Each structure stands twice: as structure tokens, then as C-alpha cells.
Amino acid sequence: MSTATEAEWVETSTLTRAALERWLPVRAILVARAHGTLRLWVSLWVNHDGVLDADGTTVLRPPGSPLGENGLVTSYRVGRLRYAGLRELLLKLEQLRRAVAERQDTAA
Image (cartoon, rainbow, N blue to C red; front, side, top):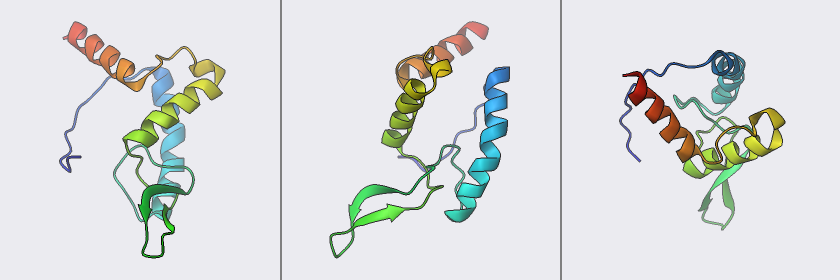
């Protein structure tokens, strides 16, 4: 994964802005506990990265750690199924990304 960050502005819906306004304060508390990150999407609970320490014990990461690709995909799928209002979202994140890209191309 690249460490370079590219900035891109994307127009968001009223619902998206409201969700981010609720998420960002929660994220700030989580990130402060995990010693900070610039990533938007972070874990809510302790998780692991599949690495074992010298004793063979799973290395745990604190809440607020950046989500990797698998964590993002899993969170999207679980959230989409758990909350009835989100079931209308596209099934996969890749489909969502393509829809946003198509919409941007159409608007340009």
C-alpha cells in the first residue's frame, strides 16, 4: 500500500454529511487512544492484524487503529446488512466506487 496521500474533493449528500458529523467526534476519541492516524475509517474494537509475537500470541491492535482493505470490506458488508436503511446500498464497495466515479464523469 502506498504511503502517499492524494487529495480529492467529492460532493456528498446531506445524509453523508450528517453521518460524517456524527462519526468524526467518535473517531477522534478512538484515534486518541490508538496514538493517532489520519485515516478516516478506524476500528471500533480491539482487533488483530494476523501477526504473532515471539510467543505465538496474536498481536492485538487497539480501537482506533486504521482499517485495512479486509476490515473496510467486512465493515461495509456487516453494516449494510445490520441496518435496514443501508440495505439499498450497492452490495460491494467496488460497485459503490464505480458508481461514484461514473457520477463524477457524468458531472464533468
